[in-house]
Amino acid sequence: MQTARDEMRDFASQRSEVLLELASCTVAATALWIVAGRLEGALPELKALFFALLVAFGVGVQNLVPHLIPVLAFRCPRCTMLFHASTQRERGRAVLGLRACAHCGLRVHGSDSPQPHPHD
Image 1 (cartoon, rainbow, N blue to C red):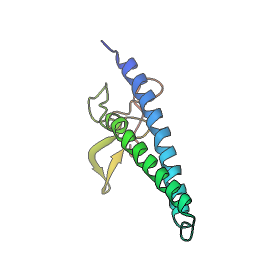
Image 2 (image 1 turned 60 degrees about the horizontal axis):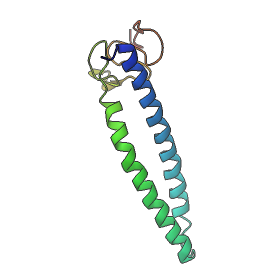
Image 3 (image 1 turned 180 degrees about the horizontal axis):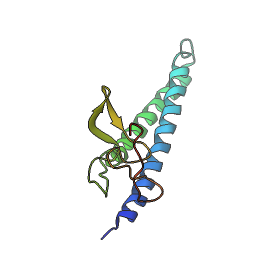
Image 4 (image 1 turned 120 degrees about the vertical axis):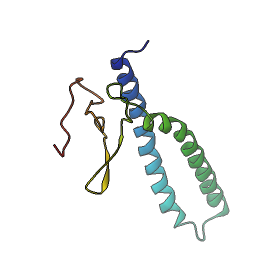
């Protein structure tokens, strides 16, 4: 049986991988967007290369989604609520926890003591 500490360590590892994949997808999408604007009048070989890179980007995003879902659906071992999102609304917007649980304040890295919410 996995302890809460092991669960959080695995979650932190998965989260780091997903963040790196999201960053690389963002950079690739930006580069493809810039190159797409310069394809007019380009050689057919260059257009074919762009299309191949676009397909590779699509496959990369498709492979990212199955890794992203468990990270977004992770439940905090302390309060058993969704780690990143709170259903409570504060000043008209959803509360989103990036470094700590949106409900109890359990941090991804660090101690088990709850962190105060910014609105407290």
